[in-house]
Length: 158
Picture 1 (cartoon, rainbow, N blue to C red):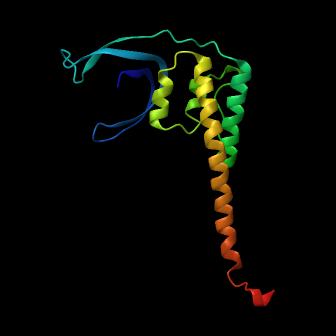
Picture 2 (cartoon, rainbow, N blue to C red):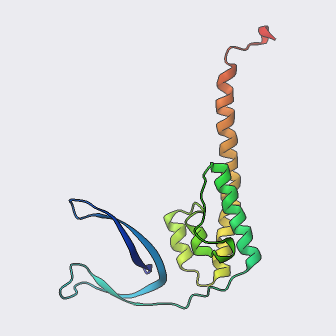
């Protein structure tokens, strides 16, 4: 992939016998890969030559609140109880993106947006699309559960 995220390893949760690890990371910045380097002396992995595109963090507080409201509405529909590690006014699009139900492809598309307002608009459009679908799925689930309770009713019993 052309774009990626520079991450910092904050904590190693568990190391498995196979050498695999469960880790906690934070994303620091978006990079663009200019050239892949196949072999690096004394390293067991490949590398790359990258640059770090300018990434505007200046956003729109009204739009942020709208997206945050949408994320919370989605969580209520799905009966998910999450809290954010930051105060509402300290959140940004990247903080909300992982909680908005984006697919991996959609998260990757978000990486290509270098202005906070663009990312918030992207999340807003996503939520406007997915919230009605999820609400309808919940209503369908309720109807399916309800339908089974009236199996023994017939026109003769009324």
